[in-house]
Structures are given as C-alpha cells and as structure tokens.
View (cartoon, rainbow, N blue to C red):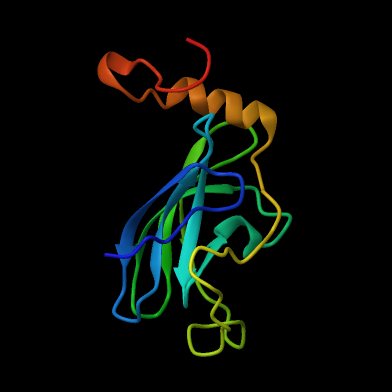
Length: 141
C-alpha cells in the first residue's frame, strides 16, 4: 500500500480503480464534503477537471475505473445539479505515463482548486446523503 496524498485543499482521498500501468483513479474531498475525481500516475495526483476542456458542461466528481488504455469512467455533475456518467479518453500526444515527469510523493499536479458552480454544489450535497439514515456527514444539518 502507498499513501497517494490528496488534491490541494482537500482532507482525504480514496483510490477506487487501478490499471496494469500503475495509474490510479478515485475521489478527493475537502472538509465540506465537496468531491473531485483524480488521476494519480508517476507519483502525481491530478484533478481530472484540469484535464478536460474549460467549457465542459460537467464537473467530474468521482473517477471509478481506468483501463489499460487510460480511459476513465466515472460520474460528474452539470450546472443544474444533474448527475451524469462520463468516459474520459486520453488524447494521443498528450502527457502519458511514459512521458510524465514524476513528482515527489504527496505532491499534486496542480496548485489551484477547481470547484463546481455553487448552485450545483448545493444541489449535489442535498442529493448525496451520506451516513446512517441519510444524514449528511458534513455541512449544515
């Protein structure tokens, strides 16, 4: 086992999927329970939202599976709070496991925190009820 760290500003992360190339995907979250999907490779954890087009209608919350081609499946939320599945496919010629420069353990691939629109975040926290009997674990009760 290895500690992968968290994304900047977050308090915990969970690795969910791993492929045969050593790439890991999962979710990192802050003290308020806001989720962000991540890709970890070569010692660097990267927020998946920094790897998709800036005009994407989805904010990627959770990465669940990664295959040997680097394709990632997970779910995200749009600006109205609707949850949708996604398939993220690597772009040929972009940074890959073979070309990425390793970072020291626990260092992330970016320095700024990406967050979903406030209205989508509030709707999502209302809909995702964690804990026993649907009581949220964080935020206002």
